[in-house]
Image (cartoon, rainbow, N blue to C red; front, top):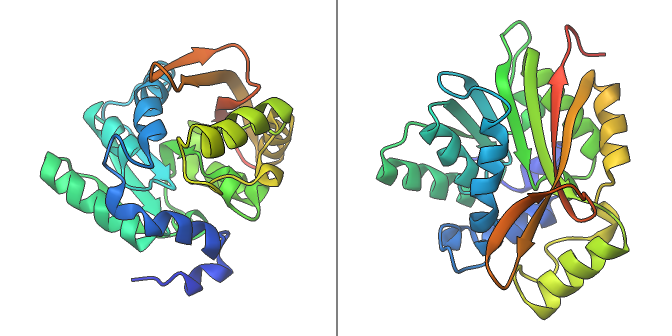
Length: 243
């Protein structure tokens, strides 16, 4: 398997991967460190399913972690390939999919090296809660664009960078309410929607939708919102060619 040292040449931060590798075994505990993802996942899945037909489509989930979204998309009828650079996460994802009777192609791989020249792209590419953890998010978005076929869709979720998101996602979420382990997010790496849209345009993607997603830590309810001030989802479409 690929070591964390090997990711130094990829668009990945070994220290960030190490954070997730350390808790991979607890990924599927709905009350553990990944509880917010368990709560957000049904809403993210519905958001995707409302914008693209998933049954029979080739879908790539980049930064799949332990497989939450990949499994949800597979249950919608998609033919899912899912990649991550944390070996422990891929192992957990494969085991859970086998226990659930789901056929998902999990790979320990980086996005930029996945699709050889000349092959058809995926119908849908997803990348949830990952862009804010990589050294070069604009380059990652360009890789996502290269992996989707013309006319296909790219879905991204990430965190806005402003005072409200700092207070709610980092101060409250990690230090006061302890919804996530401390240090999960670094404020400087959070991404404003305008930045994401600019990177997407440079990669040949058009912004089709931008929607906020809110998680109430007290009720455990996740809902879509008009405001994108904290967490948000973006849907992009690829034209006839990327630049």
